[in-house]
Length: 301
Image 1 (cartoon, rainbow, N blue to C red):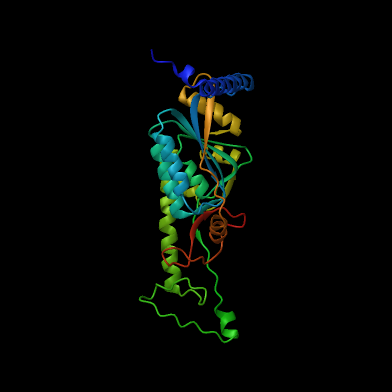
Image 2: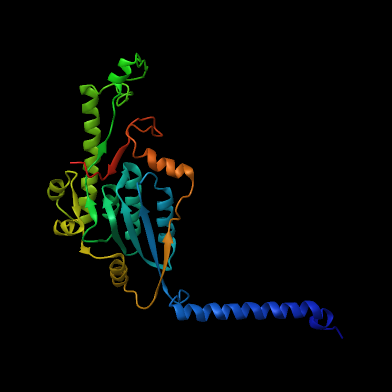
């Protein structure tokens, strides 16, 4: 008669029993510990949190995280927590579009921290509802392009720019020369077109009349309380208040388990990109020397 495994390998069988007992013991301890601490994520409804922090210079990590939350059927609702003065135009628009698509699939609430201005406010407009603290700084609906000219300084030290370009506007905005009238008109047309895109996004996202938004879109910032009076935000409250409101929007009963992202970058390159986005006349991937940005500035009109 064939012997059992425990009889043929008593030592190995004993080790397996000990290992199983240890796993079960620690599992039980973790379970009861989570019950005592209130962390019962095994039975809780999942809610996603998208963090948008600092100057917006790239959208990929954020849009990837938003797409992950959109595809996860277990995630019932999403809170977009914004603490950003804005950033470069295109990444802000890409995040706005990602949030807009997400809002078609599940409830989305934007919650403002200390600052959610310019590009940060642009993104908030894609949510179903916006909640700000009374003292949040928001609005600043506008676009700017900063350029410095070192032409006079270079002439004084005998340096002459001899750039050769394929067209009269290819080198427009170069710090080695002052803007001509044609170049200034060229940049103003670019700025106005980007500004109109911003105004349209706010009007659509907030269900406001275009003329009403144009009146508010002169670059000024608002406190959360002022923004609510103007229809730029829906309600006032803290992050905790926003979580409770989102719970009601999604019809969630019982405990919630939050999953947050995207993970913060830790590379030196990310830090450098954050600095260069704020520097006038920054070289971009397309060769343009000017970064068009939605960035709140207390000195802006």
